[in-house]
Image 1 (cartoon, rainbow, N blue to C red):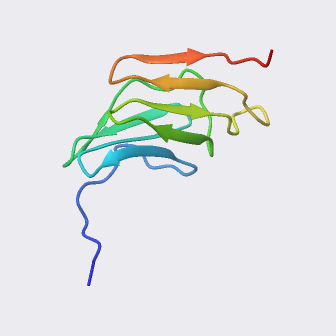
Image 2 (tube, rainbow, N blue to C red):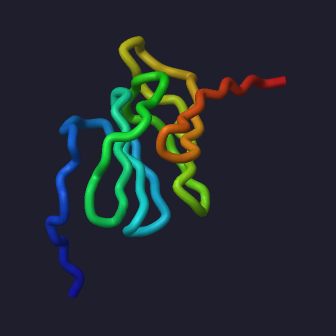
Length: 98
């Protein structure tokens, strides 16, 4: 039978987290601007989101890169889309319909 095991706590406690990752050795968890990177044994504060928000959509690529979009922010809702391309290299992109 599978079981849960306590490993390491996040550095910043809060709700509405946006998370993505490929396996148990790399993951991203972000909320309200705070972003933390999991390396398989501990969480490390890394580049924060440009647009602080909660409860957004997210998806990952076959590496530590991923995308976060929408969500709620201090204003009612956010349309921001951000690409996370690795620690220290967050980018905000604007996508429009044509």
